[in-house]
Image (cartoon, rainbow, N blue to C red; front, side):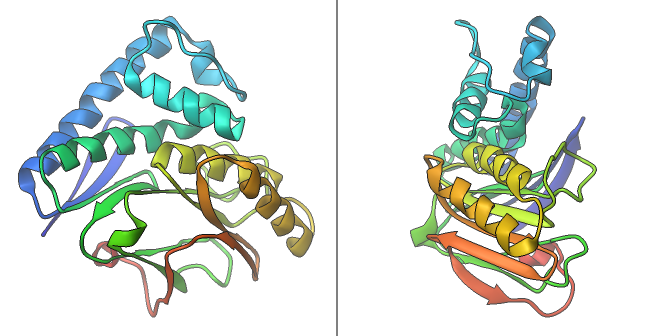
Length: 239
């Protein structure tokens, strides 16, 4: 089993697999799709800045089409799904290469397909629940997209107050966009805020389950992988 981490411009990606050729294919996919994305954004700058869905041009590459589909489902701007969409396309290349274990974590968004169990922890910034638990992803859960959004992160724009919103979805692009949308509505007193987030999650097509953390409060809905208690700090070996 091999784990590699690589920074490709703004993309900070971690890949785990039993197949070294599949890892190389995943990295190539990310590099190529980033190039296509940059060209598209130069020609269509609205796509970069819009906070609501934007249609794809007729000649749009696949990465753009995936982002548009995800943003339409969650009703957020298309860039809210960029990390997840890159992970999805890379995962598909790994599967084509015959990888039996394939995990891509791109800026906190995960695309995974594995024949063995993989443990994934949840980081929730200042919440006392942060790094206390995670999920055991089994073969029956796969393929799976996992997206996490937080109002406490400086990496992405958020209008909510959640310490962490983690979404399980049919792919990582939908999980990524949906986590952003759900996090945006988690505002106010914890119990009421979490319920608003759960209600929205139920309405987004493609979302399988969600976990919302605000301060010391937690809410769960849907079909989630097995929950795990974690002792100690999270590290790369927890993947």
